[in-house]
Image (cartoon, rainbow, N blue to C red; front, side, top):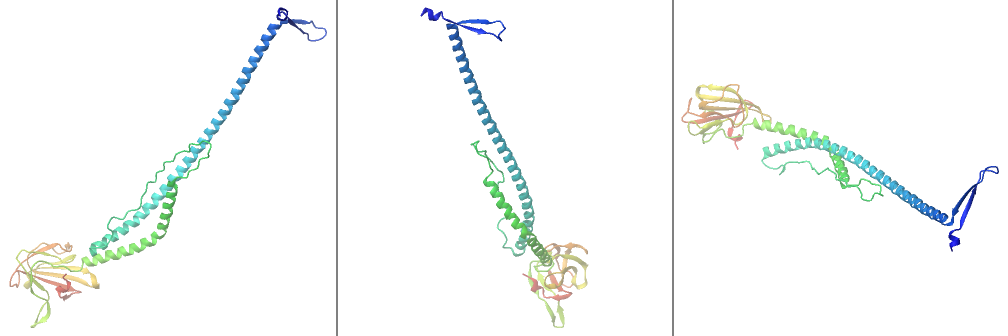
Length: 319
């Protein structure tokens, strides 16, 4: 046993036949130690290379994952930009439709003002929805991300609806514009047609064309002195002052009205006059007060309606 431990190995080193031979003597124990050290180093090298390989593999996976995430983010930015553009287009189309709907509302209000009924119960409004998009990235990094949110489909549906509406809106707008003009014309003619009572009181003398050799061209309405007299249609004052047997008198020219006729009204036997020649008056304005001036048997208003310059029965225009 002692002999084996003392056993050694001799290594000869020489470069060529003429060179000096070098001897290296290594004991058995030393050689065994060197072998063990070599094995340990080799094991460490293998482990290190393996770790480096695994680390490199994980690094490549992380790089690939980051690239996928970057792709997702870029894709999302593009989709959000498209959504913003589409939303802007929808807003523009909506504003165009709102202008058309405003015409509908104006026309509707005119109808209600004239008829006192009909129209929409509530104000007309364009349908609106939340156009914002809250998009979440998929948790699985190995899947390629695509934007498929419900908002995108909703925007497409709204955009298609607006396109359909805008396709017919110009023609509808023309129709509404003509209807609006017709309605405004109707309102104007109605405002210039005498169709209301000029004052309070009782009728003491009615209209007749000829009776007993004389003519009563108006309607006498009696009440107290100072009772307000209002114009029965919009127009312009063409006479204001004293007129013989009529006493204080006002004549208002209303111009064209309903039924293709031109109207004027006369208010006589007034106590006070509040308007002058050239004044523009609106239907229902107070123009004077009832009196007993001129050839009058008591406080009353003498009221006439002239159609194209010809006296007509005022009672035919009263509600």
